[in-house]
Amino acid sequence: MLLFRSEEHIDQWCAQSGEPRGESMSMETIWELAKAWYHPRLEMDFHGRSTEQAEAMFASVGLNSPFWRF
Amino acid sequence: MADHSATDFDWQVRHFIYQHFKATGSAPTIEQTAQQFGVSVEAARDSYHHLNDAHAIFLTPSSDTIYMASPFSNVPTDYRVYANGVAYWANCAWDSLGIPAALHSDAEIEAVLPLERQTVCYAIRNGVLEPPAEGVRIHFSLPCRIWYENLIHT
Image (cartoon, rainbow over all chains, first blue to last red; front, side, top):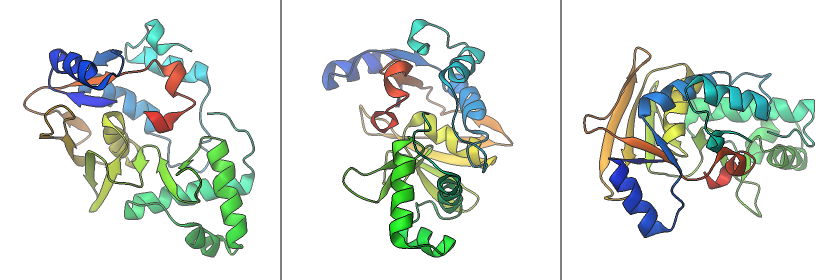
């Protein structure tokens, strides 16, 4: 997951690197996702999460296209 | 994340690995882990590989060295995160925000943009994101069903 100045820069990077053009979003969206995704990460009883839980987290920040489903 | 072969001891080792990252910005060696738990180096090595198989951590291929334990990277990357007096490497843009989220702390972040190799700065202050002044977008190249089980490529 990489950082770019603009959608045009993403297009340029994908053309240069050969990486597929996926989806992009604001840093604000990823901060909201990061807070939910990583909040329990250092706890002793964190053993990961199911794909259903992951999909629910993505959807909670507005990431609900097929790109964000298993 | 699939729990293929991890035991209760393995999850205790995982916890130690993450606490070591939090305190130092780097992963413990199998020797350090063996000393922490009073076990043999072989037992620590086995635990690292159990956790790798479970995708709880990721080892550098053909080694016993931790490559990453998300959101922390054990190798230098384009994402440098400063929090609580410790300097961390994040695996990617998402993980650069994941580190303050996991630490429950504020952070100052320096990221190198891949296209022009210029550095942008952003921060979490009082729990609020202060994005780069220039404006940025975060790009996920692959859909989640591809990278979720193989985080080493994200």
